[in-house]
Amino acid sequence: MSEFKSKYGVIKGITRASYYPDGQLRECRLVEENRISTEAGILIPKYDFYETRTKSRNAMEFYASGELKSAYLEKRQQIETPFGKIMAEMVTFYEGGSIRRVFPTYGQISGYWSEKEEGDLLEGIGIQTDRLQINAKLSCISQYPSGKLKSLTLWPGETVTVDTSYGPVTARIGISLYENGVIKSLEPSRGTPISTLAGEFITFDLNAMGIHGDRNSLCFYENAAIKSLTTMHSGIRIAGDGKMETITPVLVPSMADIEIMVISPIKINFGEKGLAVTDSLGGKHLFSEKEYEFTSFPVSFGQSSPPVFAD
Image 1 (cartoon, rainbow, N blue to C red):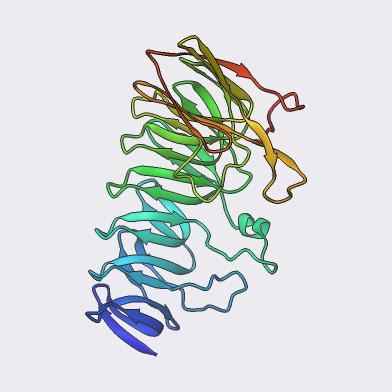
Image 2: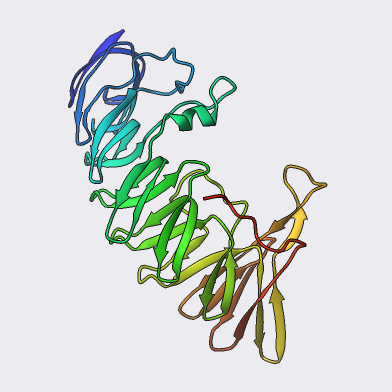
């Protein structure tokens, strides 16, 4: 065991540490209680690593400047955020000291500890901004250096309703915002009709990855206009120069089982000069708004409607 004199006082009980070339502490584990004063309040980094759900990671990490980068907490504790007091188990920071991400729980999901057991530790968290009001179980809250809300990652199975310029949309997985509070993106929990200049599209991505809420399949510009969407149940018809072209989702072999066919969606980006369409196989197609006309149409694969995630 050793100790280190940091900007946060003397850190005691250090084990398995690494250092920057100049001797500044980069990361460490601990076997003694330490109390660290931060913008999130007084934090107690983890020093007992023998719990079933404890992740194998450092208790503390630092920037080369000596500023705290992250703290994995001994137990869930109440911290101060711009959105009120929140119970957290892991906190990361920008180099300037402001909170970057808050994780209400940070347990290791395994054969010894289930996702349900981890979720049972959570309570609903109320988040309110000028344009967003929710109360749900969250796995991560991200903010800008200014303290403004950047994104929310919902706990698996959680859904919330978000008001957009295209009407209310029920979201799963995550929601991201611009720094001015305008909704930047969200992940629809069901097939949701969105009216655009190219027609109405049923936006939904069954294969959306639920890693974090920063990037989602339904995206908006900062003026709240539609930027891009992903659809499994709509196609687009492009007409111009005496030609007609259609791009639709297609069935492809599942990556998990090649004998099972799954729908591979298409993505449509709405730019100032036209549309950029990414087809189901990843091909890129650019169409000028001045040269082409666009029409949407429904696509069916033997089911009456897209899958719906329970609210």
